Picture 1 (cartoon, rainbow, N blue to C red):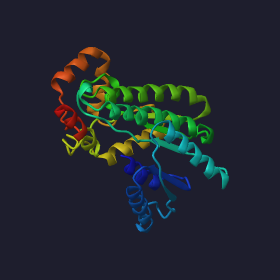
Picture 2: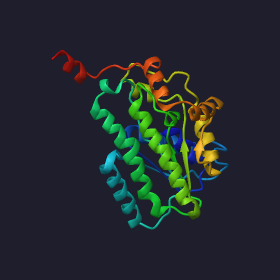
Picture 3: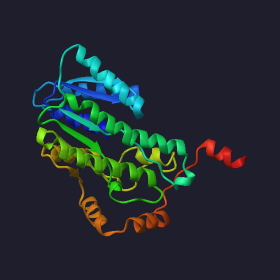
Length: 271
């Protein structure tokens, strides 16, 4: 969804610059080129200029990534002071499978990116925000209850949701909005990564264009928890009445998620 956030923000923002930050340099360059080409499309911004696009290849994961980001902001400030209108924390991934059967190193990497990085980036940008600035943290529908076969991912997103709501309360008097986007299944590359290639596409995934458009609209109004479809809203509401252990046990037994073991795991089992 990060690419879609970039496209839609480029279309509507009043900011003069849009920073795209991710590890994959090739994809970043392609997205930058795509957005810049939109300048030639009649009516894309009603003849308003597209903001300058800056693609920055950077591994944001963990404390080291946060330090790199902090250095990047400081370096940008050398050429002139600036303010940040919006931060979108979209980086993250999940893993399918029983916790005991998924690589522990991968689970710890997930906590680093989903929690440590997101928290660090929020803290790093605070001095650059102003009244009417906003932060969008991408959580998940999985944030509302513990999930078997998805244990660490759901826990990281529960953290994102809790942190975002608390941060919203703390920043309210400063006029800074904080929103947690809590999507269910969206048509992205999430399932392919989470399953290690066993499931190529997200089942019944929603259109990311609609999800992002709804998110930006609600975030502008200061909505703290953003859910797009009625099914997602109903699921989040009903989570209040379902026991945590019951949900975790049920999803562990009946919501099996396909995944293939890594070569390292297979070799370990054969030894």
